[in-house]
Length: 202
Image (cartoon, one colour):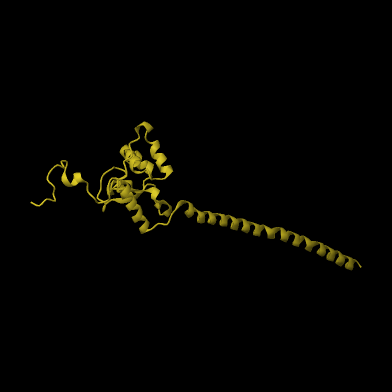
């Protein structure tokens, strides 16, 4: 009988022990799925934010976009370097990213591009714009005059570098005077237009 009681006791003890093991297992099992869900949720949030970023900060870019931006800047400012105000032949003037691109197409926007001579483009390289401007005050004045199309943040930074009472005059649009490529009468005939007509037969 002792043996059977002991056996029953063991069975009861064995029956009491198994419920404790399953109770521990469910507690550990939900912990790992919750962590996985949290990680998955966090990853989904970061991927969705990166997916939304181009819509807010970028526009489609490519060779055609650069050509169009270059043409637009030339019509507005003429072939003038936005950092030194030097007149440059149209075929040699370059485009410069005011805020360095660093491989991100978001910086290819028109409000981050200016016309620039090769000398200034090489001198600026990948320097932060503030460092480049502080190296020469004339660059600040030039960018104020030829960078009015830049983003609000860049334009405000340039304005902060010049006292308001020293702000230079903004040059008029380059193409507002006459159709592109057409010379004025003064350029054709000189300062004195009272001479004989060039169309008269000699």
